[in-house]
Length: 111
Length: 115
Image (tube, rainbow over all chains, first blue to last red; front, side, top):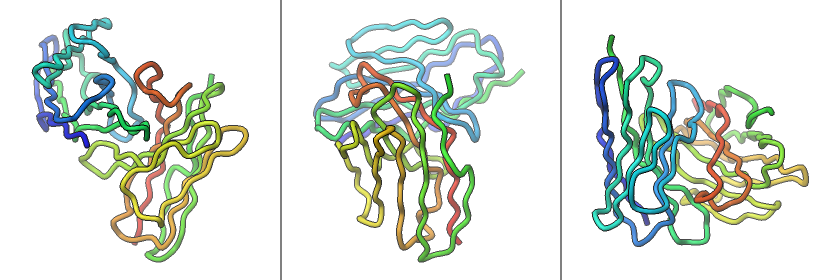
């Protein structure tokens, strides 16, 4: 199976940079995804890393290192609307198409 | 285009009852997945359907069942409800079952409370 670890909470001020780490234990997977979920809302897809390295999408970037079993999501120029929970997720190599999520990191942005 | 729609948005049931949750995927999406999200946790995989066939099942008891219809909409059924079934039930659709090239699009979920 897959096991993903993330910090439970992060607090930062507007304009700051936040890095959310995700370490995982899995026998193999296709890639690392990140989803954002606002309170009471639907998780929304942010980024996907199939290969090692950095993927940049606007203010958000995601990184993967398979050799280190590690990835992170980087939130830059934080805005109040970025206050939300962020989940890393992997799909293993089994044929059940299951996406395994971490427990999530709650990011609180303060003025 | 409309996103993934789920109904009902909220539901209160009593232990032992059964419940049916419904999901309509984004137009053109043939894959539907169901996830359970308990407060403070990440979504947990329940089922995945593609082209009306079950392609994956998570570690949930047989009280949980689902199906996908010819129009790709889906139902999740839970029988003999337990207090522990109280959660947010999320439906997600994608063009194909492989998430590595087809990210999941989630609905707003159905909040189920079992008393």
